[in-house]
Length: 236
Length: 263
Image (cartoon, rainbow over all chains, first blue to last red; front, side):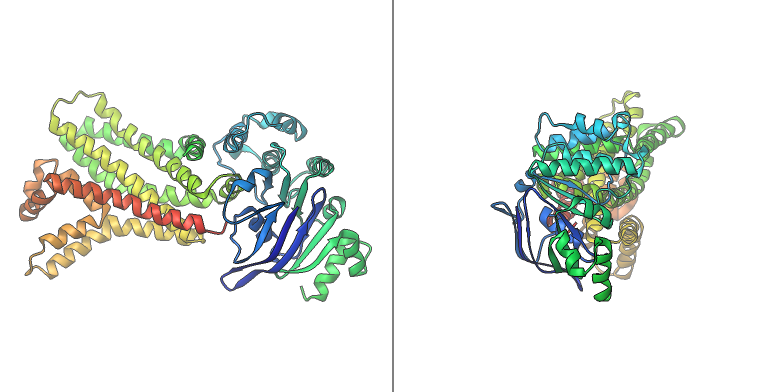
């Protein structure tokens, strides 16, 4: 479980997050949604310690994030843009993450098979397409069986087959009692995957609860239309 | 330290396969070999190499350094989501670029010297000083490039500042020294000029190298003043310490920025 209290962050004149209070449950998939520049990625980066909050606390189970890095042992992160050192091979990238985490055996071979990366494993990253890099990013996030998964636009740039493979994998991880956070602009993905939704507007929390509750709140049967209606009524 | 070495290992693998680093190494080899074939003896080659080294190394290091930091932005985010500290990552990234660049220069320049047998101790000392100065300049200008790129979010702006910094130290600074000494020619300027040289790593490397040869005598009174200061053990210690400070200061400021930066 991740508990966030009174979280605020300002970048110069922009108040990116305004007193956010959120509880993210274990064994569930929580989607963070909202228009562009609503603070989704900033919220994720605060949890990861990539962005230092101005005020507020973030606690993962009993460990509170306070500038230390040990807690990240339990987090697998898939960033929005998958860019790696161009001259390293996929194998070297996997080895690098494994070395940095001091892990012996991880289940990367199974994931390489799942994402059909067998032919790409010896190729340098510069020769890979955007979608293939995204699949490599998924392997790097999932291979050490983390308790918490943070996925920033995980299906962006993936072909339909890879996208459904990844979504199946994410749903499979949920059944193994993982805490999963994802952001997406694709509302059908959010509807398909998520149990809960956190809706941010201009850095402030607008709604937190079950996906169905948001639809009821917006008076729409479809999540995308519900979110569009909320954005419209808030002048977005 | 272990984490730093792990990051260094992979970053090193990435950088040494970069075609520009290979071209950089080949460039120094071809220049040194060419100078030997067409230029003649060791001293002349070293002096000609010095002029190339003092201009090319700082320029290439600021270009490589800024591009490297800006291009690694997303990968840094991924690495910082791993259980590693920011200091280790910064040190690994810095060494991952500076070590291959310094090695590229050292290997490229050394091969033509090693295949010719040198016996004259003064020439060996000069060649070693040339290598040392080049390596120092690599570490200094990569550190400056890291500092500039970490302090400027905008890639174009950071790149521009880094190149201006090179232009300032490599070209403009000497003009300023000349202007100041000409304007204040009625005053004793020896000590202020020595101080001004200590404040520019390129000038400092140049003086240390020139003093390895007799040509410092051709510089007249100024040469004598430099010889009197930089030629002594104290002067050498001050020079090397200044170069070390020139490496450590931007590195420290860059690290400070890196540990506080929002990615």
